[in-house]
Image 1 (cartoon, rainbow, N blue to C red):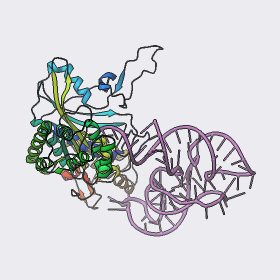
Image 2 (cartoon, rainbow, N blue to C red):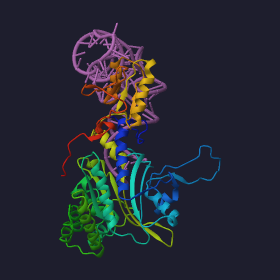
Image 3 (tube, rainbow, N blue to C red):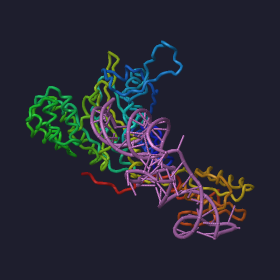
Image 4 (spheres, rainbow, N blue to C red):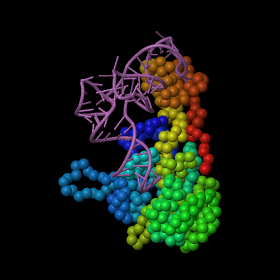
Length: 447
RNA sequence: GUGGGUGUAGCUCAGCUGGCAGAGCGCCGCGUUGUGGUCGCGGAUGUCGCGGGUUCAAGUCCCGUCACUCACCCCA
């Protein structure tokens, strides 16, 4: 199940890898729809100024240019979308008059980023995104709902255990202000490196880069190290003795998310106070998701709350959402051999061809099977039966059908069992009807 | 964008101070003339990334270039 990469950062899977990806996509759609999210698709391009608002010129956006553009022709200023949130915000503004609020939507599409590729980092990849958006104010319980839906989705996939880590930017900012920080963004950025470079180096950076006193740095480090599966983080933070109004608000919000989520998906959502996520538009809750045992590939699902997802000047639209990195997840599953795909083709049955004069008889069998929903294909050549069986074996097709004027038979090539069969009545066991994707390893436990 | 590493068969790679381009796996055939897998025997496969240079001679040394890859930045 190897990855084939012609152009770095633009992954293409082999057929069995694609089957694994489709399981993720199908499961995402099913779980999202089960929770009442409506599907939309937005165009692939957005005006540049939309994507680069707040002067973020450092974003690696791919530009759209016409090959035959005339000399001096006006630059359309279009780029391939960088994420699904900005296009969604634009869509909400454009269609506000036609939408019912609160509006719940899911969106599964490719996005493009011109970054340097690495394991789990691509220039073209698929995101599966859910958001809830409302006018003026958005009920807070949706912050817990996003984590619950994503945890539910991930729990249904044949993958290592996933943990949604939640933090709250009010909590972090309030705490940093409470210890005297002036550049809270710098504190946040450095605290986020805790896992990667360790406590002592972060402490140094908090003093040199973020301008904290050594005591304040220690305090921030202690706060950022807190991680609990329940609401006990509140007491742990309070024990550090920092007092701030924004901090209290954040503590309250995060506690509500964690307790509400744990009531639905116990253990799948934890409070982790070092999660920074989103230096741009997130204003409250932030999410990040790790695959247990594969933390180094980064978050596979992230998102957060934004008080003004969109604004038309007279009305603001707050939202909260989370996005699954489908390509990142699938690339880890395939690249690290974490899943087993039962076969590389949809066919459950290969109908053998006795000789080319008898091909019509084989086609008739296939038509009968297909009429009853059994995916099958007819052997491409009337080779010796040994070769036809091998053709099926190579693709993982479990059954070979032998037409015979004296009575058809079907062989399970895994067991070698062969039995008489009638194309108008035979059915494979349900487990063999479609390719299956299963976990290749036993589930790992959390640290 | 910055800094390392690697490019040899379909895949994973070996190839010494320059001297006939290799192994394992896979693939094809036969044993087994219409029932695969195991086993045995046999066989095919190369722009040594690309371009230039040094040399009697370059996969090997030098220069350039492209691609891939890892880390940083940032993020799904």
